[in-house]
Length: 356
Image 1 (tube, rainbow, N blue to C red):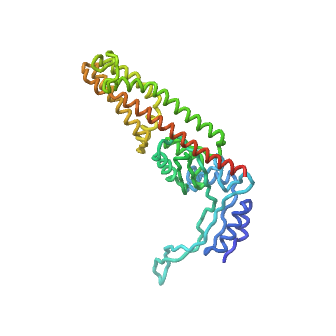
Image 2 (image 1 turned 180 degrees about the vertical axis):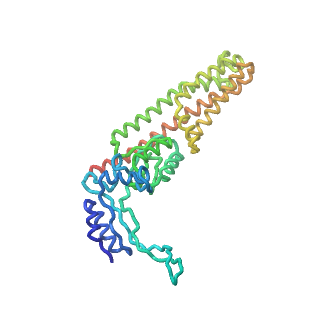
Image 3 (image 1 turned 120 degrees about the horizontal axis):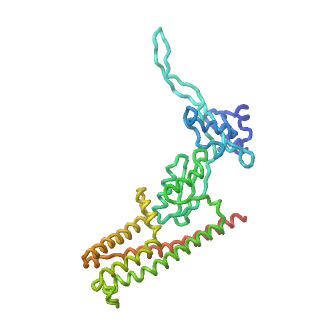
């Protein structure tokens, strides 16, 4: 049975008592002896470690510079440090050359030495996510954060639009997690940074914005669909707007009507196309490809009409692009309403716990 030496106890001065007691109990049941090599560090000492492998020769040992980002070794708001380095006494087999009977002989011998180990509490934080359109988006974010050095666990809940990350603060920071999510095409921020009422208001504003985009899109989609389908289903139509009576006007009016719908649904294209280039397509990518293909082929057919091929007016799909974008926007609205109800329950539970 081993105990902490006085030197180790001296190095633990200023470290949180819970961690000190943990180390005292740990060494009693540990099969190996160990010593504390570092406890509380100043910003200067932390920065000196940070420079190792950067401005000073050596291997990088930390991503925390001590100033912009603080290590768990540094004093926190309560005046205590939350980390300690220990060196475990282990036996290592090493090759050495000895002289026996005047000859050099290579032997494998056991060597005692301390192997540095880091002891720190792993932190778990919850982030609020924005920009997800489907379960694939949630999987993309989860894979991105899980692949980071220092992440122990990352779980994304698409329904509540939240992500729980368990990570080592010495290797990974909150700012870096938020930056990586943004690089993946989404947004993330700590849940603690948002008050319940503020977040609920933001969500409601987002839902209201989706509803407005649906209404504006529908205003232009309905006449586009009517002009395109009227003769096929036997509805009355002006001769000047029929594909046979005036193919140029027929195609031009639809082209003009669909442009506002594309504008109101531009987010599908901006998000979806970026996801394709990142090789991580999502639902927005499918919508962008479907609506984009219908629109571009219709533009091609319109050009043919103006070049003299009047039959090309029968190959227009402007209404398809408009209907796709409008109905998907409506679906986004219903999805947002459903999610807001789930989040309201979640925030209510959080607020009740806060009051207890």
